[in-house]
Image 1 (spheres, one colour):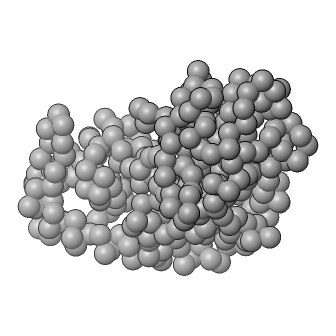
Image 2 (cartoon, rainbow, N blue to C red):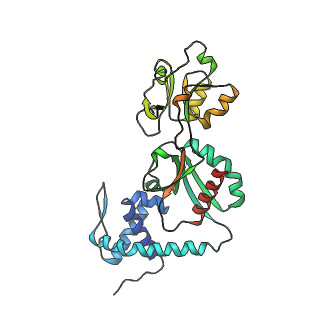
Image 3 (tube, rainbow, N blue to C red):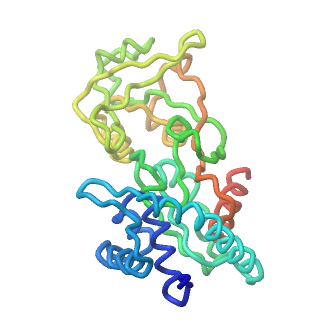
Amino acid sequence: MTPTVHGSEFAQLRAFVSVAEHASFSRAAEQLGITPSSLSQTIRNLEERLSLRLFNRTTRSVALTPAGDALLQRLRPAMDEIAAALANASHFRDSAAGSVRVHAARVAATAHIEPILGEFYEKYPEILLDVTVDDATVDIVAGGWDIALRPGEVVERDMVAVQLGGELRQYPVATPRYLESRAVPEKPEDLLSHNCIRWRWAGRPLPYNWEFNRDGEWFELAVSGSLIATDRPMMMRACLDHVGIAFATNREADDLVARGDLVAMLDPYCASYPGYFLCYPKQRQMAPALRAFIDFIREKARE
């Protein structure tokens, strides 16, 4: 008898495609919003119904069997068509609804998400934004995020990337009190004799090397100091408390410099660079809630 799809059996096929694409029961379960044990039972039920083994499982890996691979090749276009049909139908709603999971570097979240929230929810009250503010460089697909806001230097090449807010600059800053009894650096190498407050990408073992530009060529400087932080507000707070010299973006430091709270240094060596980007996986169809958020944040970044 030819197998047919009824009721909850569609959920089994959706679960199968998710496990196949993630090559992981735990990541697929997170995407589907169910427990790994429930997902495992769903796949077992599907295999029993078809009388086929679809996956080879070990404690370390999940791989498709030839039968599973053949099923995936036939199912994926059908699932894409169903997603397209649902997305098209949703256009008839009066407003976008649904959830959007966002992973944002702290500076990007402060500059591009926090200021728009009030206006965004006036327009889209039915959208749930689930925002993770984290400077770690993560795999947004594997982690289940829909979109990320991150520096251009860590945007994956296979992502759609849209620049937000133009270019940025980084430059060393310190309080007048810190500099009272110390020589003000005149070239980047002079920083090596100062207490520098270093920042480290979350999840990386070593602090970020400060980057400067001399005669059109970029170079890195491995400074040293008594404080390393993965939290940039902590870095800036320590700088304002006269601990040492911080390497800050213009978004973090321009107002403080203008007020006289901080002194900017080494301007000739601090060139502009591409700032933050909104990035997301290439996809044929996009959920209305995600499209609404992307369009809104892009529009506000241009203002």
